[in-house]
Image (cartoon, rainbow, N blue to C red; front, side, top):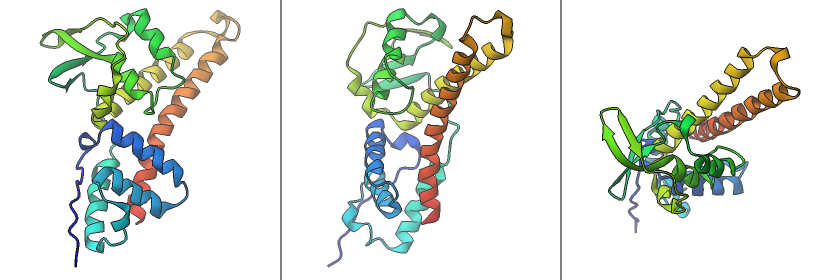
Length: 224
């Protein structure tokens, strides 16, 4: 007797939550080097397909799923979304990072890297806060108070997460490059230039790491 399977095929990163993405990344590490297992894990976390039924997929269905995922997973230019809604509450992205409070800056600085990992929901919880006032393109958000209820951001869609991440990484990269290009050698205190250069390298590595995730997943989809 044939068993009917119901799959949830995402059509964009908006259909994948941060929680799903983190669970996928965690399991992919467990099967590093085993492309078939990784593909099965992808379909489990992104489409809800039990790995037991992976080999039972028809070639037609597998091709449809593969093409559907590949149609958006190769997309890497995701814009910053200034406003998101969680539980009926509108949240706004920090409108002026240069004027971010010391408490917010200090809490973000506790994390070793800016990347989509187990700390990303906490970073989102600092950067996105409830909108207090809004008029046209101008808005203000609730003052940062060290709110620890970051779990709500685990349900944030990945298009929002990637948009915020790439905005921050590109901003940091541009800032470091501008400093290095504008300051002359003799104007820099001892050891500052190597530190800035190293910061730029770390930012680029972080960006490359995130882009590597896109590359690894899309490569699997194209090769099978």
